[in-house]
Image (cartoon, rainbow, N blue to C red; front, top):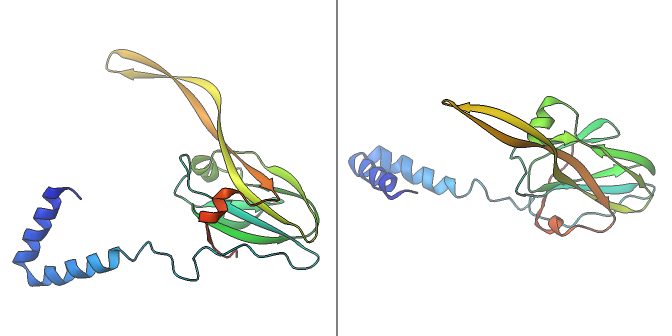
Length: 180
C-alpha cells in the first residue's frame, strides 16, 4: 500500500474508536479471503469408475488467462465452469468426444476464438486437458491521435485444448472444484 494511504488510514483510526474496530475487523478478514479451505486444497485426481474414462480439465494461471470463469463443453454441452487455478473431473463413456468452450460473445471476450479438440476416450483410462492459447491474424488498425494517424497491428486470441494421458506440470498447482 502507498505510504500516504497508510498514514491517512492510521490518522482516521486515531480519531474515531468505531473506525478502529471496523479497521481491525477489515484487516483480520482481508487476509483470509483468498486462502483455500481444506476441502478446496489440491488433491490428486481420482481414477475412473469401471466402464468409464476420467477427464481432468484444468485451467492454470498464465499470462493470457482471463480472471473470469470460462464454460467447458464436452460434445457441445456445457459441463463445467472453471476459474483460473482450478480443475474438475468428468466421467466419460468410451468413444469419440470433443472438448471446447462455447462459440459465443462472452467466451470470445474472455478466452478467445474457440477451436474444439477431438479425442477418443477408452474405458479405464485417465486423460488431462488444459486450454491452449495462441494469437492469429495480422490485422491493421488505424487510430487518430490528435491530427496524427497511428497504424498498429492487431492479433486475435485463439483458444483450444490439449488432451493427453500424462498429467501436465500445471496440474500440481491447481485446486479441485466439483462439476455440477
